[in-house]
Image 1: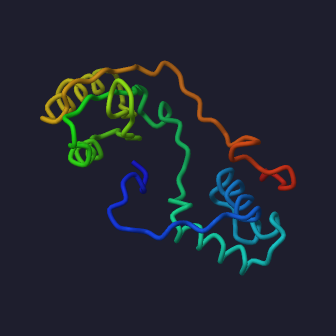
Image 2: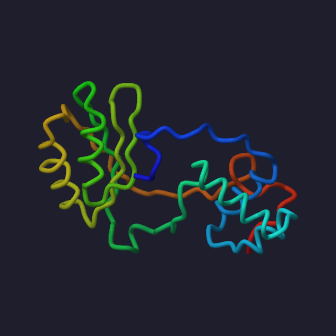
Image 3: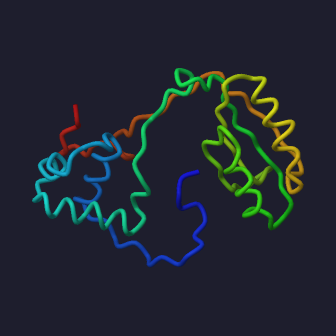
Length: 174
């Protein structure tokens, strides 16, 4: 799971983002490998200003990190599933620690509704997925029940206009 799920230490509230900060975020979401110089040019600020802003966004916890978008099937993780879990009340932190240790766990969320936790996993095949659910997950004492939703096909969405895509006045990276 990405950082920031549960704040164990108190962090000051994030400062408001201005249009330049938002443009920087859009650029980095499109290409996390964009250079400071490239970012600065696209948002029309100096390299020092862009560098300071990116560091502030990191320090404030707005940017939690940089990562690669992986094609799981080509990386040998051909079976994916969303697994819903019902857990014993007030055991979220304990369960989360155990879920983070599972091989193939990609995303963990505490949610409201008919179940308590939503877990995304990627495994090499259905046999490994079955082992993970029937042996590993169901042996966690705080897990009351699970439901597995097999993913047949998935598509990562590129940041788009209106959400986190390039602003109209920001040239998209090629």
